[in-house]
Image (cartoon, rainbow, N blue to C red; front, side):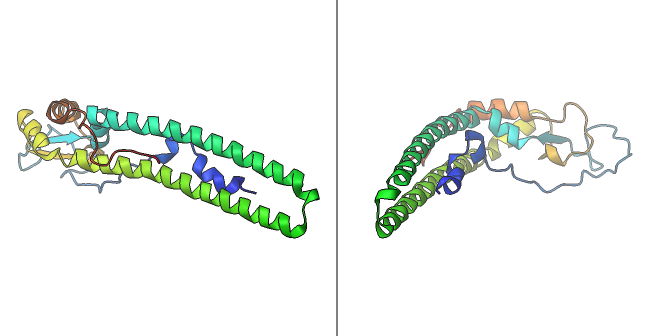
Length: 202
């Protein structure tokens, strides 16, 4: 009766994660089949690339966020299991009592049960969405702090132009500066400290 409605709230920890953002492809100024002599464009601008997903994921900040979400997800899963067990028991109880109840009494009890099950589903879905919102909020906070750090890293590695690594079709080893950027972000902001909007699941 309630199982289908509740299942969306009983997903595992991996289910909350939003899809990685899709970045627009950028032209590097050369075509497939063209020889790439070095990591520079025709205008002489030295190119460097960065994997912004790995920048976040492997930073102290991103690892702290992942740990907080993992802890909250496990707690939510345990709560889902408990609620499912309670609702299953209540459903079995109503089934046993049906023969002793009038049609009107059973209908009222069944309706009340459906309302309870729907409320559980809604509440747990809201908590799952809170995980998504927390992750998105912390990503915005992290990337809001990267501009000056990335500019400094780009200058230190001798680059002039920084592009998304996913926009690269052909590239030379050494173009990627993600590792340098991760180390610089760790030095600059560490794990970011307490989130302005803490992850709480009432």
